[in-house]
Image 1 (cartoon, one colour):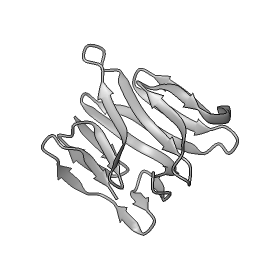
Image 2 (image 1 turned 90 degrees about the vertical axis):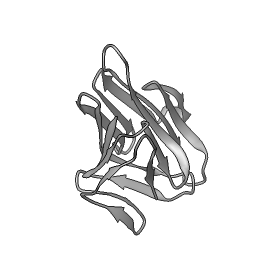
Image 3 (image 1 turned 135 degrees about the vertical axis):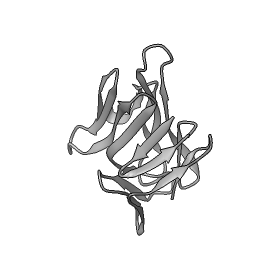
Image 4 (image 1 turned 180 degrees about the vertical axis):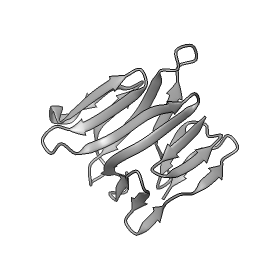
Length: 141
């Protein structure tokens, strides 16, 4: 599967997105329906899990602070109090998933920001790149 993160295209991935060395997001498409399935761990600045998605369903939701809206082809995770988009993903084409917007802490306490133009973690950023990962994971940071 191909995964877009911002304006960066990662071809032939295994669906895993590692952020600062930790597998934090896993995307998959249901074989028959093509529905988007997302596994995701959300950390606070101290590295504690505050929310967790399992197959696009909110399994952990500390203080009921988060809301997930999903369709078979898209997922939107937001922080209710601030309205911040934590994670926005959609199926862009058969076997192509786009991570188009998001802002959340890595396990190391840094903030990952994804926009349509780029992804960035502190001073590290990438925009407009294409990589063939030959079945490997997307690595950010």
